[in-house]
Image 1 (cartoon, rainbow, N blue to C red):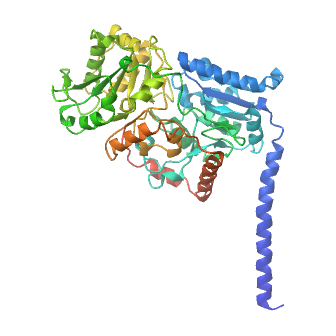
Image 2 (tube, one colour):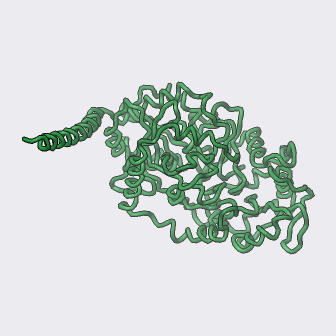
Image 3 (tube, rainbow, N blue to C red):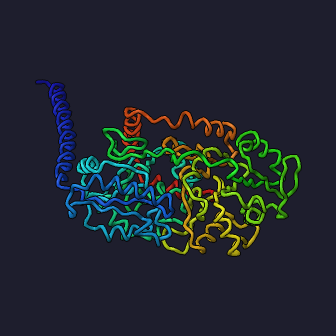
Length: 517
């Protein structure tokens, strides 16, 4: 055999060896899955991120009944644990964002193999989920879930990974996410972590994923095809079926009052957009400004305009809502900005689920200093709309708490601090949005029928409104099983392409200047 023949033979042997190595690697991975076949349902702890509110407590009970029906034939010692945070961890202010519970979870469930965390509307097949988890090695640091990816840099994620946002995958909590015990133990041991900045809680699912990806753990999300998002299918082990709640007909138009915050400089720029879109769908609406403008008309509250915060204006509105002889009799109120874009009919549909005789403050929930201690507070961010029941408005005014440290203090945060002092838990709703549609993962939005968005800046508010009202006919149509599985598979492939990303990328992204919310 000549030299060239020897080289060709060597190359062929190398290729064969390479194939054998790859095949062997795959077999080793599968054998690890087989070695986990001894994992049982009792080795999984289920955490439901439930809320303390009559409607949500009922939804948690539905969750519990579905869960118990699947494990009723198991012996008591073989049943998995199910924990509702509104019951067991109701005293932990930031329990909804998971971070402050990490040490407790790590300690209380040290004998478990997996921790499955989900929302109260998540549904799953416990036996199918067990089979899925048996494929993975629970002795390794693993973070499993249904991947979401940003399409552009976004303020709600502090512009993280601004050079290529789609390279970073984070789990949708509606589908549920899974932590292996070793990873949970490490996280619980480090938390509260002085090296991880967590003053504001904006989007906990993204923030938790970034913490898991940080230098402390260096773990990326492993996409799992059977952890689905939108609907139940034969292949899904978990899914999120609640695009929007149906509690019967929407409340009457006259049972909702809309308060719009504006100022003189936006009377001609923003108010015409409001009037052209959702403003003409409100039976009870007033526009509150720093000047009287009869062409709109506006109500001058006697509070000078401020560039930010607007606490003085908001508290003046609340006092008016509570004291006005006619307005004060209306069961529901929402305070919005003049660049909020909202579907009021859909809001009235949502409010059919709640009792206005109960003090309720609802919207998109954020947090300030609630991940590492209880000294902070949660609040309903104002841009997506702040909903109040009549009882909540009465509580604020009659307890003499409708005041501000200054006119330009942040109104939504001051209200959050006020409700904490009163002892009233806030209600988070995933249908309100503080930012523009482009600031959210498209797949996240597709699984939930939105009520509101915020901002005209670099956004077409009229088109956004058209999309909101069109959602009644289009978004509510579920994906086929093949489409959803293909979406997850594509996301898995994206993760494969980015597997060589180094942690230096996250350092560069997080060290860049960020715009505060």
